[in-house]
Length: 117
Image (cartoon, rainbow, N blue to C red; front, side, top):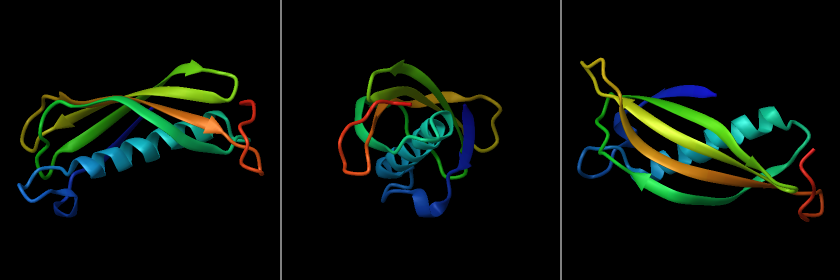
């Protein structure tokens, strides 16, 4: 799945570039949305993000493209690879600025791990 967002002033750090925590928030939210759509009867929570790599700073006004693909499905969990590309204002080129893997685990109503349906 792909989705897009725009970097606005409220997303910037004290140096005027995208705040890393904001990127992590978007990655977690968008990956969860993909999982929730693929497995609508599951109750997923984030288990882990690994191999988190901030590759380049991101300017205000950049358009971010999030590319999210399922990498692995286990018995009670599912893992997605996420790559984020930025198109800076006034350019046509995109650059890979961030990548990670996000793992979600499916929980029962009592909070126990349960098989992915």
